[in-house]
Length: 322
Image 1 (cartoon, rainbow, N blue to C red):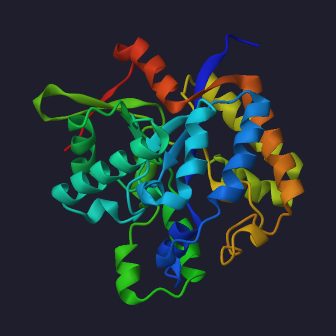
Image 2: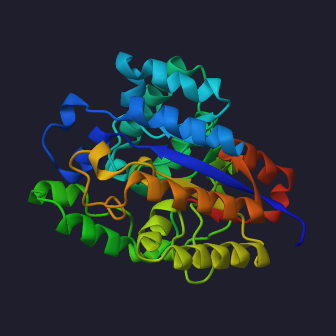
């Protein structure tokens, strides 16, 4: 096997209420949570595998006293805390720059107070981002953004989501760019620098998709395939990772809570792909995916992976922001 390269791994810590909110379901504003059941189990799994991960935390969860103790476990286990916005609204790109500034700042304060870790990275909910967002992050001294998702199939995901919901016309309008448009597939898969006004830059770490084809292979998609055929899942993942290594494409691998939960653990979310898998079978597939990943790459939290990118900044392209 050729020289091993580093890859980044992250976990979007979307809570039960945030999924219900995006889906347009009632009761989300009571902030129902599964964090106290999810996080100890996930942290134990990562500890057994020797993994350190970037957890993108929603500020609203960090601000609620009931979540503070369990979120503190992230720092105690040696993981990284990232900013996933305060209110987890996938229409973040529609907000004004002052609104974005307030959203980022409130989340940053709450996450730092809850975990003792100041976020160095950001990921937009539902992969939402805008030039104003990038400028706000750069001005606040963030090391990287990780919001772009270069795939052509975003509109298909949005159609599926709408078909499984009972959203009003206003809610559909808010979510009309959920998961992005087909043009997102034209964006780079490799990390790159946004070139901002005044000559400043901000590192962008896209959620990696298969080079050229731009099909996803983050864990939720792998589990959807694994529910049909575990062998096909393993073959697809090995193909994707080999293609990334051959093409020298840096890898950012994404996980979500529903990758570790069964339908009974997340009431109202049974419509998500792979939620019909029982927890034991899902866990076996997750471990298969992580073990295959570790065969190809040294797995780092995104902050450490970003620092590796800064070791050779001239090798990364620059993209004009506006």
